[in-house]
Length: 189
Image (cartoon, rainbow, N blue to C red; front, side, top):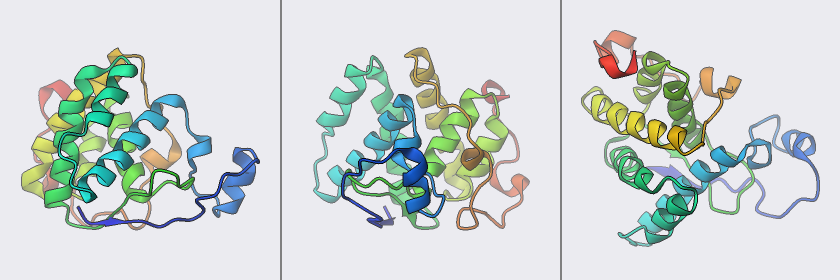
């Protein structure tokens, strides 16, 4: 996976989310997120850490999902992460486990899950196409849909945020929606 670790600030802060947001130039921080978003951010970061350290089992992530009552989330999550690691057309910014800032790659994955849970598979497909090549988008969308549904059934809704709907300049794709995926699967419409 093309991953950038950008440790904005790895120290623990005593301040609230509004102070943290100003420290990060208005960027999204972990402190601003809810429990469900924390679960996904942690899983993304742990997966990348495991990948870098050649830990193929991802036992900690599987146990984390089980503790959150979504034990079947690991399969589709691992598929989405593996696709991203092996086929990404741009660098995905995934931060370290202790970093308070949230990388654009992490926001991308959260946005796809959130958009699917909100019934906007069409927008999730376009967002996936901002980092996956067209041939991988359909497989990625299927995995993301399964992951979003498992999380939702387990009580882990990722609520829409402006950051999830409005991609940053780095995540914008010059591809038209028809170039990403000509037809959205019926399960996502």
